[in-house]
Image (cartoon, rainbow, N blue to C red; front, side, top):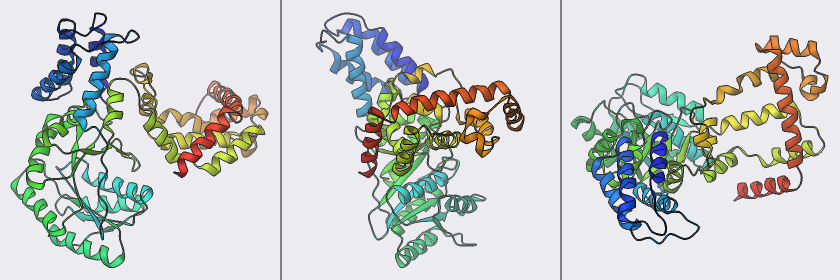
Length: 444
């Protein structure tokens, strides 16, 4: 996400010369490059120009502290303006009501149905809500079946009406069912089209009028850039939606939609989604995204993702094992599974300041763990518990059983031993305190 924009902005700050003050002369080339970077990211010319004008106005005449270079001051100003452009603060959705109702709208292929499943899981696990998914896309082949499969995946009931072609009545009946059976949130997945048309707009407007949702969301494919912004504008004129959801941020996206949509429709981006995993849904935090665009990482989001997978009781058991030097390959395997649940490894690493650039041309994904997992799964319980017994014959058998080489088995055993030593040191002192701190955060 935003890789090209990150590189271009970093290069533009290096152009800034001079000491003591930022002047119209030494800022000109930098602003020109920033504008080009935004245009390349598929931000509209009008927004890019306004953005640069605002940066220029705030930057000119700024006193630069002795310890701060003009380029660093410019980075701070651009960071603040990017945050402002994207909405300043994260905004929550309204799920209150009897029941709360979320109406999901957007074009076909934008990811509405998948998002509906993700939102149901998010509200179920993080808010403790009893959710009902409603299948109102009666046109797209297998749309209802897709929602049923997603509902089963996330453990949420799906309401649909066999043979019905009236989405307005389906939505009304679903809300009635929710009231009768004590559901606290209804999520209505609606039909889309390949392009905006009058029939679609009339239908979604009729559904909204019939069920009076507490929240109307517009789902948009972030890879469509300025097209996404124009579509959002059309939908907003008819629906007056409450917020935007950007999907497919793991694709080849330049970031134009994320940077432009708030300025065009004056509605906040509320969620971003990357990947097909049902857990891959994040609240949109403008400041954190600005941090990532400027290569500052996003440690807060990384910690939050870790907390979601963190089990305090398991951590306590693990700490005791480490202290007694009883950490096994089974434990090592378990830790790998927890890391994988947090998301794409390269995306997670890019949240660490400076790591995004370092890993730019390195191909890292969760499949990198496959060989390690296969090797551990090819071991006997005794071997997992005590790797010291792994002689040459055992290692050869494990390599054959896992489809790897003896060298890879040897490498894993060494990595495990090194990890065990590091984790044992962490089990006491600062590491112990860190675990306690993480536990207290989890309880809040």
